[in-house]
Amino acid sequence: MKYSDFLHESEINHKSISYNLLTPRPSKGKSLKPQKIKVGPVKALSLVGPYTLTRVMDQVKAVVPLAAYLFLFQILILRQPIAEASMISFGLVAVIIGLAIFMEGLKVGLMPFGNIIGDTLPKKASMFVVLIIIAILGVGVTYAEPAIGALKAFGASVNPQDAPYLYEILNNRSETLVVMVGAGVGLAAVIGTVRFVKGWSLKPLIYLALAPTILLTIYAWMNPDLRTILGLAWDCGAVTTGPVTVPLVLSLGIGIAASAGKGDSSLSGFGVVTMASLFPIIAVLSLAIYLSNVITVEEILASATSTQSELTNEISRWSKTPFAEIIGGVRAILPLVIFLMFVLFVILKSKLPNNLVTTYGLTLSILGMCVFNIGLTYGLGAIGGQAGSNLPAAFMEVPISEFSPIYSQALGLTIVILFAWLLGFGATLAEPALNALGLTVQELTNGAFKKSMLMYSVAGGVAFGIALGVGKIVFNFDLATLLIPLYLLAVVLTYFSTEEFVNVAWDSAGVTTGPVTVPLVLAMGLGLGNAVSATEGFGILSMASICPILAVLLMGLYIQITQKKKDS
Image (tube, rainbow, N blue to C red; front, top):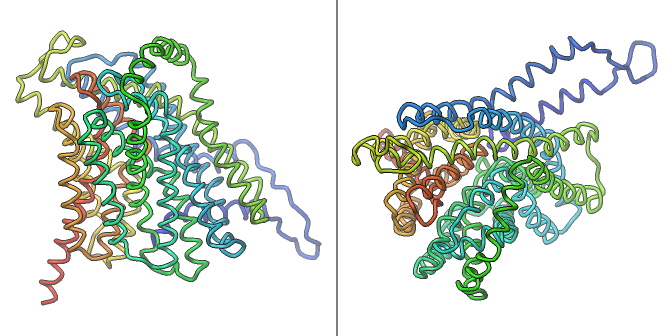
């Protein structure tokens, strides 16, 4: 089964079910007439119940083990009670229900747009128009990503004295930040689509994208005022490859490649995730460098002093009601839906196969995003922030814990790093996308790269990356001195790897940053950073992206060497 098949499997099944239920069947000797199917409440529940339960259980498996792990660690190891446990539990339930509704709406409502537009667009528009539409779509899907709201919300606590330009971007330029990240995703989608059509290799594109990324990183690193931007910029690359961006952009790109007669390659689905991870980094770094030339640190500090009390009052006022989260959910999905409808109905003059089912799906998408945003604020963000704030009590004295330091410094630091490693390993294995990717890779490599090998190498890479990211915050490491050598090592491994393993390795980082993991890790990093008086708590996600790439590349080289020995 091809990679693209996994993206459409559940949608096709849903279409066939909807078709069978909605299509009238003729009786013998009679003309075709719509037949109403009468279903009682008990029968309806027996039909819908198992389907709904499966969707909810998928999210339960992702959320509950992580929440239980954080709860037990804080109570048993850190000896701290869970503050506002009932409210956090309510938030986690909202996360589960919201994600279940949103993912169902995504499959039923948004994905059909991507499939139809991808199949129809190349036949009715020039390639130039196609690429413009895909570029605009990149901004829309970025707004619709559940994790992008977490990036803006959790970063609002930055101290302007310590990180002026980081404060400016996250508080006064947050919409500009999302637009720039979206522009990076749009450019990545354009290049990915052209690659589908032209059949380009991924290796040269990786080299070309990494060159400006590393050069801009070095430039920002050499400027003390911009150095604090690096964690945010590299984390943005991880935030963008979520459940909205990847399937929707892939369905468009694969549809266009198929229309051009270039969609039969078994690797046609790979590569877009890689580009969508790198170009947002370039976009955010470019935004920071531009701001450093148009606004001074003194102007930022003066503005922050006059508006900070007003901002605090606004935050406290809005935090008492979920209304802001609901508005945020509508704003995230509605513009994307309107744009997709404009392309489909106005530009392509096409129709949806089933307006009723699609409308139902779009309603679910908006409703699910609103419920998820409420859960993000009161559930994932709260428990992640608590865990991060309490972690330093294991090895240093902190005001929130009367027992701190609970352990000796060496033992406490070991416990904290081990906690981060287990969190990354468990969270990654719980990602449904990783299981689908493992099955695809096993099929494409004829069993040489087994599903279990991929899953454990990716999970181990993420675990090592999160542990390294936590170490970066605790020990105040310089992020650039960690990232640049690791990415240079990835370039060397890429050069010696085959195209198949390069595609899989560089895209594997995208499946590890789901809508549950990203807010949890972001909140934990920022809470930990505030507790240990670090300048900023970003950077964990960026380490969790590069390490699985290295792990899969190393595993691929091992498999290549093993196969050569067997052949000889």
